Image (tube, rainbow, N blue to C red):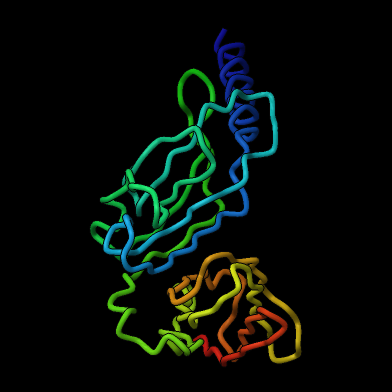
Length: 218
């Protein structure tokens, strides 16, 4: 009888582990922070936090838990949490108690079990008083930057609504690329995920021109 009990418990453990292993996580976590004065954004810092839905599985996806450090910040059924300059922002407390790390966990099934979080982003500072800066500059606000922190980029006053931002290694390889919109005279923050300590070149392509600046990651 004891042998059967142990066998059943072992089988139950294996089944439970298999079910949990199917709780696919979100992917392509993206965070972008810009400064727009004036705007509806908290402290004029607008942001876009987005991710891709998990790969489909036998489990029922209900939504997503957004964590700031280890604390649950909000639950949402969308794949984006954002504050834009022209729309009143429902997340006025987003920057409370910064710096902090953000991670997203997918929520599954009737018992609201969570997936793991494969990636995270670091919100470590607010952009302030950009209206006093030279609007013709394209510079790295925090240079050098520590690995794991975001790169703050001050964009010039530009007429184009679209531009391409690239992070290029010393051997010419494009490590990251972003298609950006409406970043004129603002600060944009991008993650240093996948960037090892070293020297990089950041290029900005717009209106047929290319602007560039050096980045040092420690």
